[in-house]
Amino acid sequence: MLETLLGYLLAVAIITGKIVLIILPLLGAVAYLTYAERKVMAAMQMRQGPMMVGPFGLLQPLADGIKLFAKETILPVRSSKVIFVLAPMLTFMLSLVAWAVIPFDEGMVLADINVGILYLFAISSLGVYGILMAGWASNSRYAFLGGLRSAAQMVSYEVSIGFVIITVLLTTGSLNLSDIVMAERTWWMNLLLFPMFVVFVISALAETNRAPFDLPEGESELVGGYNVEYSAMTFALFFLGEYANMILMSGMTVVLFLGGWLPPFGLEISWLSWVPGLIWFGAKTAAVLFIFLWSRATLPRYRYDQLMRLGWKVFLPFTLLWVIVVAGALLANNSLPVF
Image (tube, rainbow, N blue to C red; front, top):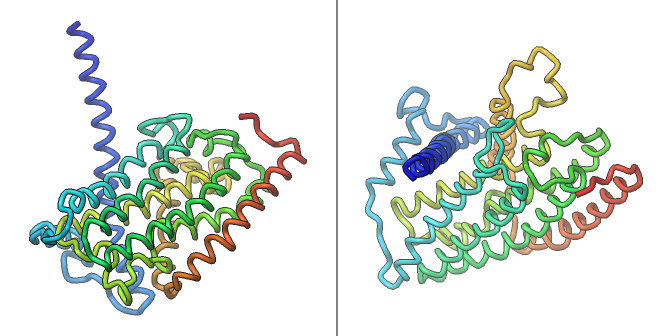
């Protein structure tokens, strides 16, 4: 009995240690993604960005965190206070639990489940609830309209993301993310998947409410959108959740389309073979994240009707058609996998 209990406690300690090893670097990455965004946009706009707090402004994310933590959390008098507080916590928690199935390297994954892609799709779909709860619980018309906008936007682009994932599954024959990375794809399969890669990246921008699709936070008409009534750490949780979701969607892009932890273009046989898979995964994720930052500094915000038209009248029929094209091409070349 004692040995069983000790074994159970050891297993819990190991799992807890793995979770901490994932969450702590992720929180650090979220903090310094804000720094990277400000520096990248500053370079594009010919200015300096953060420079004063620490060398090269490297301590600016820490200063921002201390400032938000020290401020007073204000609860609106007429708000539903329990839901008001739970909404940012839900958004932040969902952005973290999704990382349980993301493989950083071969064998380096917390839960290597056979339906990892379905788990990710389910968690990303739940993200809309935090924003809806925040908009409704604030008892503010601006926040409520921002929440409704976000719900319609995220649901619209999740449909396209679902069809994109189907095309990847057709070429790999597995729902396991590690198997998707390791699956061999010929050059014509990668060529067929390239349009879906473009659709996925654009849909990821809309799914994370990032420019040019940041309509739920349209300050010109909604002041601040669904989080207009939030302050201090409750606002910070929404802020952290948004940037964590950016990293998550970039990681999903790397796993589905860019070979995960594998070296690009088959470079494992060259002098770069000594580079660890974790480094390749991080470099690819950073490259996709740069697209998020680049688009914010470059593209103007869409109108809401343009956003809906792109999702329902362009992406939905295109992705549905491309599923048929990919399935037909695989069937014609006897390359359709057996699930």
